[in-house]
View 1 (tube, rainbow, N blue to C red):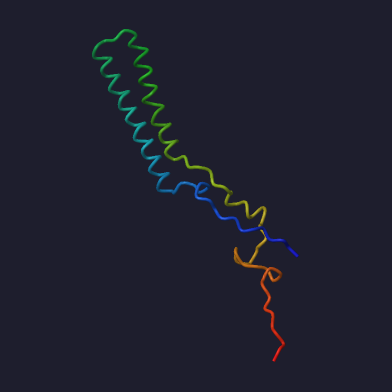
View 2: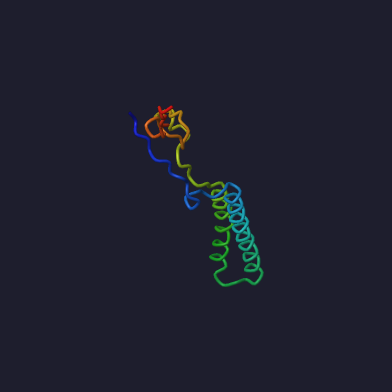
Length: 119
């Protein structure tokens, strides 16, 4: 006889964020990083206009920001939380199929009717 595990409800605190929430969060992060990139371009233009000291250093830092930030923004925008199980895991380690519904009782656990034999 196979002993069944007790049914464990999923707690709401264990649930992952919805895909819409994840997408919205990634979009906001992307827009924020692109705003920082625009700020690098504007700061670089202002520094050239005022002929700031150590201009070569400031312009190289702004150029580095203008190149790296879009790359990082795209990587972070496409980043999703890892899935709990890999989709090919079942091919290598197939699960044993249990055809009983999650909350059903086994034959031993079901209450038995007592039939009185009295007329």
